[in-house]
Figure 1: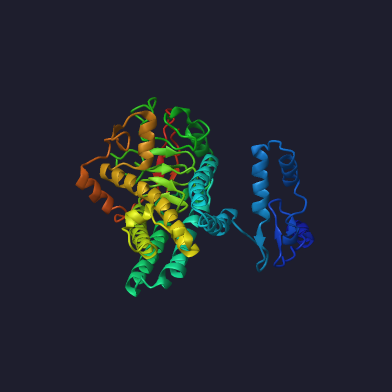
Figure 2: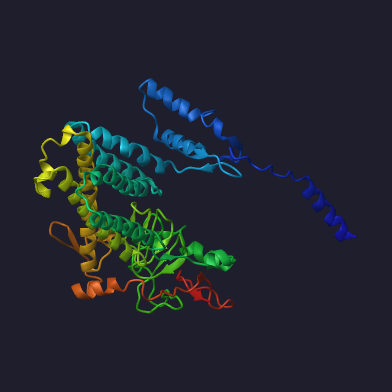
Length: 454
């Protein structure tokens, strides 16, 4: 009788639950959980109305208002799709529309070209500063890089190849270079070596584990010197940690330096860092690259370097073919700075503008490639270089272009051999979770972190 009586209210509540109506192709659920329509994208936007009023009256707009406007735009910018409208990433759109417009405007006159080609890197750096300060992911630079490759190739096919100075073999080589760049980028976009703790997903934290985490976790990071804002720690051991209570992890070498990540709640191996943009720890993390919208770590560092190398070679080859076509009587270096009569023809002016745009992008990538070559030669990562510069612990050479920490440097040949073998040996990280080794034994009073490998 009791069971039947207890089952009746459950059936009644289940019957009273309203069924959600299926969304049509133009409807969606906004960030507030309310049903909205694509046609109403400009309705009831108080923040946008307030911002426009302040812009018209020449009053300043608060940064918080900008963020709310951008959040509203990103939430309402959608395209019709089956079973509800899909959201479109706002950062993908500016390069698709602005890059062709800017390059075609720059090809009208020499002075316009100087202004546009100077302002484009400034705008890109400004946008990078905004996104880097907010520690958020953006697809702007990835979209800019991919669309720049596609648009340069399109201009080459439409304006350079029809002039008859580029043969089929040269066109095939340039096309193969472009395809190899895309393949290397796809490989670099894969898992860079993320460290994940399955115990956080599969196991619930008990009371004793929570108590231990509260003593040593993100709520009280003061006992660990060198902690970053994201909860990551450097490889130095805490000064106040007693020698009798070492931190151990099953399956890890006893000689390896490890530290505790309060965000991911695991012991990470040496040279692993927590990326504040991706929100995950990465093995041998070098840096977070905005051009691939991913971290560069142990598993994709080689593919990243290969993509840079192929891009530089393909860019030099494409620039050489274009300058040989529009400035036939001059060398490549001379034609880059002095090509008389190039603005007399709009087609030649557009090719010349695209050449200079490619040179600017290639210069930035060449600088990144040079820094990477130096770091690999000294066996340091970009993250370790930045930390050494902040703490003034590294040896600076060539006006700071080279920073040698001396911690992992084993010589030029051995450093490159170690880089060539990255990712060849699989890393077996145990499923770590915080647990007292003996449930009947009280936890250590020194605040140590004990981990148990299943």
